[in-house]
Length: 549
Ligand code: FAD
Ligand code: SIN
Image (cartoon, rainbow, N blue to C red; front, side, top):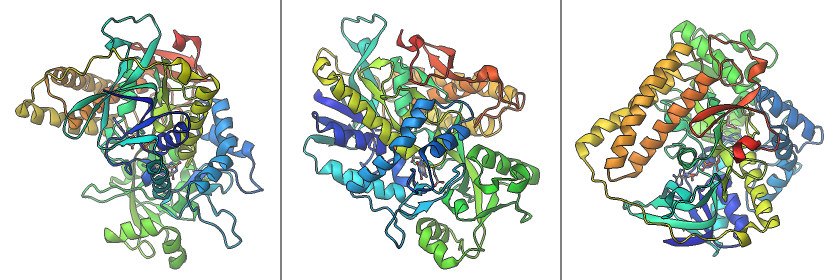
């Protein structure tokens, strides 16, 4: 049994920002599934959106975010995020991130889809790597922060685990059970727990996300009784590198901001047909659907991105990561078209959290991609999420400090050890591992960019069955990292599909053929709590009384 004031689950931007500041108040454990360096954060390319240029204004960033969010953003959350941009950039610079500068020494600003101004602060096309490095270094030099690598949170500890169960309506989080690389399970106890486990792209067959992105935090929180919301809004990035062997990596939107053109297999620049004004720089849902439609019309597995008309030296200088990675797969982007396809990229929904990142479970906070803070609504504006993760991790700490929560919260020591009595049956495991492939395929084919009622229904039926099988298998089996991940993606695939069936309209990232228009009746968040769906009016401060019950 290990005890800390704070437990942080996840070592991306949300978790590490929190850890650095929390360490000023108490002891911190950072628990992370692989090495400290691994996260979605580290793969971020484009950069961080922030109002820096004097021609730009906070209200423009606010309005652009609301426009992309298609009516579902929580305005106070967006306002806070847009206002905090410059402060977060300053903090990252102080922590050692060396953002690109112009010759005159000011921050160089990129342009991305949906932004009315150039406001993307970046480090070439490897911004995430630069941020991750700086944060990891900062954490490693802090003696109040204890690092647990290759350790995976498997379930949150709540009142349900107390020997004398006293569940009276409100639930409290006491820590997390953690599986290490030797398959040993340790009880980690804390006063405050932050879920910063990132996204869930790995539920889909094609994704820009790394292997860690299996939505563990959202699944754990849901099992513990947290409200989750808006899971139907999975963002598909329009341009992942396409290769027939299945290789995918992101080709940043910044390259379209720099002038790259999307072409179909006949070489036609097609975006003007779908979005005459913004063309390649339209919000992602529009670009991804346009690509999907061209691919279907042509019966081809990809379209192309063309940057060959730009100065080759400038292309290499601005996009070294993309240039070199494409070259390693045989494409010289200064001379040849880049084959691209949309891929699952970002989950706009998650564990519902308020402006202080508090969830409906006492002492459990959620920040970053695992949370639904209200910033993204029905579609995330490019380069808003690194910023969002930092902002809400810091507001949670302000609340904890101002309300002296550390003084009132206590470490619950009557928690029993994990019951690890299952036995592993290898033959069964092979059978179960087929389920993973099936989940990937079903989600891609039936719960992807363009949805249809009947397909969603079929997906739900099959996914429910798979999920039931996995739950049964899980109870009997000695658990492993792979099995926990499978259990999590299986649960989340059901939740995403049910959320998509529940919403009878098309809005933002959720496009359903039978209901192609927005419908005012659905100007609401879709919340899943206690096994039922609720349509919740968009609530600027996070919770409604429904969630506090
Ligand atoms: P992450 O950075 O994903 O970190 C999650 C952490 O939790 C990881 O360390 C992981 O190992 C750990 N973890 C997960 N499950 C467990 C578990 N069960 N137990 C213990 N640890 C666990 N956003 C932008 O704003 N700008 C960009 O330019 C940009 N580019 C992107 C490019 C790519 C290729 C991708 C995939 C995303 C991009 N995004 C970008 C999105 C952005 O990177 C993520 O949304 C953001 O980094 C999420 O940060 P996070 O801290 O919430 O999660
Ligand atoms: C990109 O560089 O295109 C990714 C930006 C983002 O996901 O915000």
